[in-house]
Image 1 (cartoon, one colour):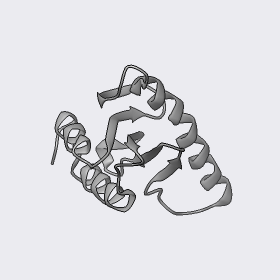
Image 2 (cartoon, rainbow, N blue to C red; image 1 turned 120 degrees about the horizontal axis):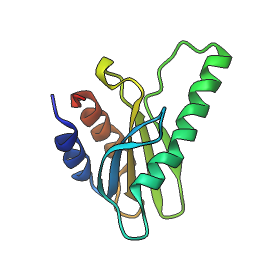
Image 3 (tube, rainbow, N blue to C red; image 1 turned 135 degrees about the vertical axis):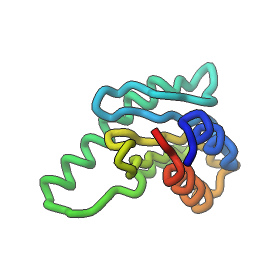
Image 4 (cartoon, helix red, strand yellow; image 1 turned 180 degrees about the horizontal axis):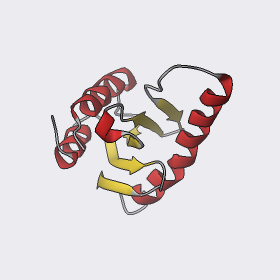
Length: 123
């Protein structure tokens, strides 16, 4: 099992990583961030993406889907944004948010590696 700091560091080793955050989707607050740039504030991005997670959870509930979100992918012209809800009991209500440089990232590998990071995360 990995602590939050170790998990964030592991996520930053994913090829093309710009930044990563662990976010509480009830409050929108980041429990930890690593990376980012002066023009890319991970606290703001994490808080903004809580709306995405909440909306998808609501839609699944309204549709009666008894399924679990593995990840949500947002593709931009120059970036990929991966949102991965934490599935462990201790991580309920949290998600990992990873921003990737699209020109350097391998999306399939990034999804796989972020899933590994999420699976080892202990909150």
